[in-house]
Image: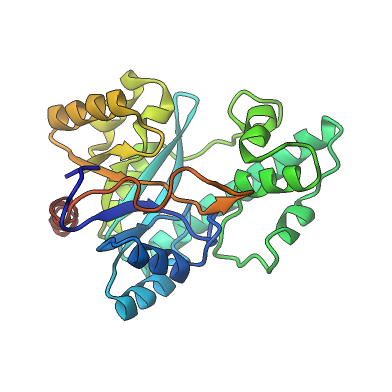
Length: 288
């Protein structure tokens, strides 16, 4: 049910499109999944479900199962925590209103980042970041730090995306900003209320397993993302044990964002995956 070799059906449950901070259209992600032999993938853009419909339509044409999803931005104990939702009703009006409110917070956060960078003597504006998309930003799409990093690289303030984060945008760096957000357990409730199933994303990135355990106990998600591009073998084993201890579904995905400056970020589509059994368990949990 993990990244194993030779699984008959493989599903990547964590991918992003240009509806948030991915590089590809939703249809391109689906086409890539087909080329890589995946049976399906989840579209899990940040604080938006804007890319799901296009992906579902592409999946129906290509014979690829597209799982409607989202990745919700939350905060706990001073850390940014992400919560994945699967099989949720992407037309649920309450969910759409809630996600819109999160994008407003994200927009205010982006403004703070830009101001901090300007105070460092960096000539950058939000209009430049949006112009870098090469297309208008839709109201239901979200702008993230990778977009700002792209502009920093384009203007010569960083060598590549990782350098932009390491110098300016990562937590603790001079350009980092974070506004108050909802708690992880609230996001999990939102997902359940929209008919979906909640999963705690990439716990290894938080550097605090006590916090992870606390979130799992309070939020009661159905699963935890054990297999992720930024998890090594030791972390996979540790979170697989944690999933077993709490009776959770061990899920996984690449967290694919596409190619930026020639580098795949975080991992290539299909590099982390789960079996059809895991997908069935998630679907059943959403139906309960």
